[in-house]
Image (tube, rainbow, N blue to C red; front, side):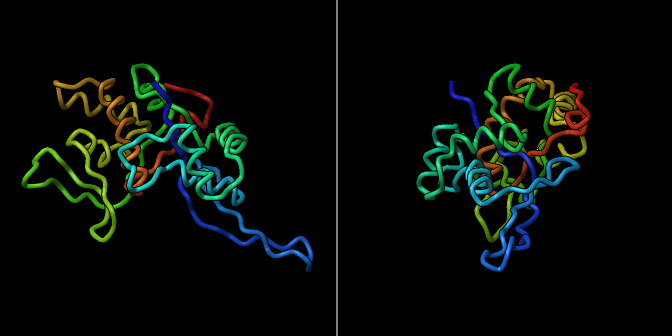
Length: 208
């Protein structure tokens, strides 16, 4: 099984930087908030980070290192391999296997932060819920993922959110929820229905 590449942090805007001298144009910095820090990315780094969210037409497919490199080539950016490594080192990208303890470890170190609007379920498919904006492409998820999307930001980590949700549903365990939410992330990220952040315990060098 191939690991999934997940972009981490919230994009907060592009900002013009002062020119080095009159012969050079002002440079743009793309800022991403990671926990309590703001990190600046250059154009290449930002392009790779954005493409790690996946494409709308492929929103059900996880983004692997190989598929991310392919997306970067199609976008006419430089070789993605060193950029991926650099972004992983800065914690702006992470790898996760959507199985067992790997999913739990990912959830322990991160938070799922909701974006968009919850649009409820579908009369024809009562167990299918929609997240997004009525005017833009939306993510379609199960009831369990919809509840996590709605309430996960209230917990200090995604794992704690999974544990809390499991207490309310005896038919599913926290570990099962962790695996399901990792599998659902491609749809949530590609449609801007959520973003992943590091949790406060990760920033302090501790894990639960």
